[in-house]
Length: 157
Image (cartoon, rainbow, N blue to C red; front, top):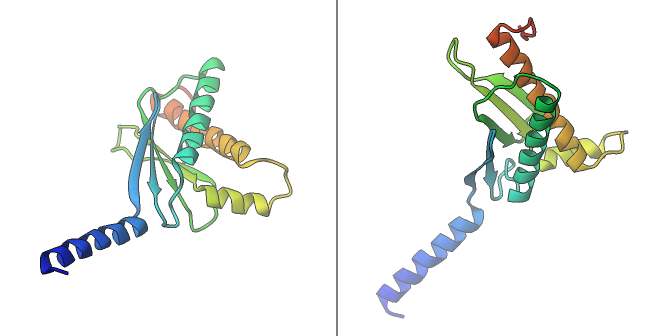
């Protein structure tokens, strides 16, 4: 084999090997949410289908809260899908500067959801657990939004 052909072959094999093991940061957006997730082989990796399941759960909860008469945060909310070390299914926090509310929601990976279900005494599907976790974490955003608007004493201090 000629040196140039061998070099090309080695580069191609290296690219294939790196791609097979690589993780990629992904983002999918909806009207109210920017879902950040990782695809690939890491512990945080999830499928695009799971990211859409999280997106659907959040949009459904958002629509429910609006229909129920809650005043909602109107900006796009960042959502990170990741594997927590403590087995938490979700979290919410304010990532903004003082006086600038910038909510962030974290939702556990599908693997964490499945591990939780395996140890649970409650009959629920992964889809149901994701939906309830999304609704729960989004309601923390409602709490913080109300507190930041001075509409009620709902702050989590």
